[in-house]
Image (cartoon, rainbow over the protein chains, first blue to last red):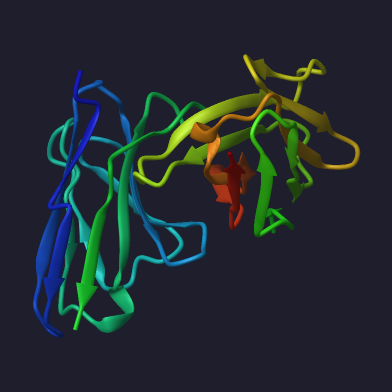
Length: 112
Length: 116
């Protein structure tokens, strides 16, 4: 049972580059989320999805895009990377909005 | 606006001691859900305990229990007989309705260190 799988675990980007963080879950959850966690801070919601084909902005969506073509996959795309996007990114999924979140191991992104 | 506050940035206790982490929240809703999540140094976040606001009984999971005071909007986590493996960041989270949607709000976290 893999749960939530994120790739890559580490990445260094130059300013202006783009990249996609991959997230996949095998629990047939409808709800999926992308969070960022800055040092010493809690989680901030970037985007979330309530099902295939449906996405919505969270608290800090600027500079990011997502898609949800299947129930399993929820990639996060960073366009024109900026130093402010240096963070640890977590993907999560849940069966319902009020239920337990299952997290991936995180992706540490550094933009130089 | 709904908020979650964890007033203790860092705590440390000796192994086998009991420790209580505090969490307060602000909401005008009557029905909501509260969570404690643990993030060990390996970084994967896992659920510790979940409480539904309409349930009067405090949730318990083995050595972990909560003191849920709805009127005071307080949701503290008690860890009994603490173990080295309890060393982690602990986050309090709130799920409740904001306008027509559910909203999940996170506290800033408490770093807990268990000393041998």
